[in-house]
Length: 221
Image (cartoon, rainbow, N blue to C red):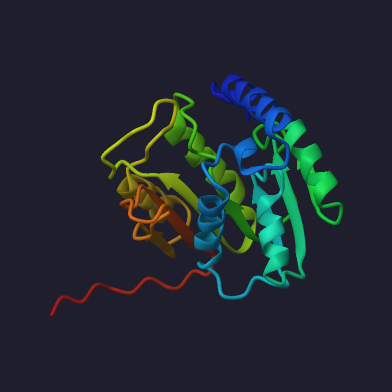
C-alpha cells in the first residue's frame, strides 16, 4: 500500500535521523520536551492493560528504545519488537538494548505478517503530515489485526488553548468513532491525565481490546 503521504514519511525519517545524530540516546532525539513527560506518556499507555510482563509487544515508532528501557525497569520478561523509519534512532536503540529486536520498517511498503499480544504507539501521529487522519486510520487498520490482546496509542487533542506549529491535533471524538466503527467495539478513550503538572490535559490515549462480545440490545427504561 503506497499512499500520497509516503514522501512525508521519508522527510520525517530524515528529521529524526538528524535529531538522533545531534542528541544521541536522549528524549530530545525523539522530539520529547522532557524525560519525565516521555515516561508519563508511556506509563499511561501501559496502564490500559493489566498483564504485560510476559507478552510479545510491538513498539511502533520505537525511536531509540526508551519504552523498552521502561518495560525492563518494570520487570518485563516477554518478547519486545521495535519498528521505526529512522535508521539513526534504531542504531542508538540497538547499542543501548542489544537484547531487543529493532527493525527499520515502513509498514505501508512492507506490511508485517507476524502477530503480537500488544501494540503500543506513542507520538507517531504528532507531526503534521498534511493527511494525519488518513495516516492514523491506515496505520491502525494495518496494525490492529496483528494484535492478540490489544493496542494503545496517543494523539494530541483539539481540546487545547494553544497549538504549536508543525504539530497535528486530533478531534478525540472522531478518533473514538473511527476505532469503534471500524476496529473493535471495545474502545476506551482517556483524556484526563496531565503530562506536565499544572497544565490542562492536551493529549489523549486510546485503548483497543480485541475480545468481541455479542452486541446487546439497547433497553430504554
